[in-house]
Length: 633
Image (cartoon, rainbow, N blue to C red; front, side, top):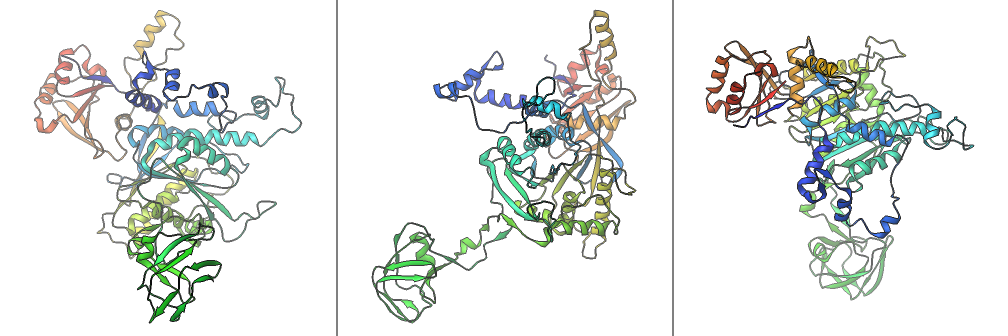
């Protein structure tokens, strides 16, 4: 009988290997001995022609450190998340998550649980204005190192050019910071998911190239120029700084257009200057708002448009009396003319907007000038929450901007929003506010590194601490409002997690040089869990490894004889987990497990036990494997 048994994975999901598996399913012929054969892949893509063999140069974005940045996105994390029990609101029921920790490591941890689950990502990353930022990922480098990489200095550090691009080091660091985070973030978006990125002139050109590479040029949705403040800042020596940008990409084909409003205009033009001149027919019976009379064949003009009547046109009692051929730069087809055209007061032509068009949405404008979306509004919101206490955020994004983005994406019930540069917490605050005014709830995951606050007198030690306090204050303000209905089933809570080191020992045999050292290594790893670990922390790590979400339900409910089991469930997952941390599984416990009603099991449970609990007890392992999938710690 085959054992249904495997070890718990300690590392994060390797999405490159997952992609290779999918590629192998589609094109098995390009794999040899289990490895991808690049030459066969080139042949399959007809990419081995003479021209490509001669010219191996391609258009793209390159910078010193790009290879390392790619490796960093694909390296495994040895971290995990720990629930902060004393932090949050309604933590047993909420799906809103705040995570305190370095966002690259956290994104790696979320890969399995939230892959293809996020509808909208909004981030407001460092704009790279020349000031230091903290997400260096070990890519910080001195100028001499940078010059050598770019061939501007020899091995002795002597400059090889007279005008080195000193600022390039900052661009390289910024690109190396953004690349792995954006690559991991894309994995989390659902197929019609969208990412909005706030940025300014310093890096928008690099960001566009970066996004084209990671998301694909075909998934570029547009760039919105946003008026960011009421008054110019004059930070630039040449022009006033009044605007920044929202760069928008989708993961795949959008299920509906991005829009914030319905079609509302009643009429539309029918000519377009520069279009090819073509003939259309105006059939008798259409409405005319101009004077009654006979209009002879010939050229006419209205405003900047010219058209030609090819036969005379007769109007009586405001109705066209005959069919007329018109030569003009038409922008609509004959079918639309038949349904909607009319003659204007000044003897021109327009058309009525059809009923089916009124049901459509207008595409987003590439210009956003709305006072609710100005940064000053965001500052006012923070000052109001903190009762005019000075905060560390100079230009926090306002709730109005997030509402604009939510509306553009037409978020629906249970859709997820992700922000991995949470900052002041505007995104999570906006989700909570949206839930309070809508008949359904959306969900948010916000991530913020616990950067220490410097330079101002503040009672908060870190940015993340201030973010959490903002969310607490926001919930109190929302729920205390007179118009808030407590009868609504709105998700107005959040739970907090913190990035910690893994609860499992890291098996490292790199420095083993003798048989005795190897024996000692194995003896030290008979227990895979680190000492003095809290069971609930281990459970949360298992939850992430098994692809369960952070709103999963944990019940310490099953006591079978002397063994305690935790039961983990989520509406995202078909199966459930049964976890036991006891060093030994009693025969009586085995008997009870094997005799659970089939309706209680129904092939749903994965049984997770300590390795030593089944040590030298293959008979129990085999019998349990017949009913459960077993994984060991």
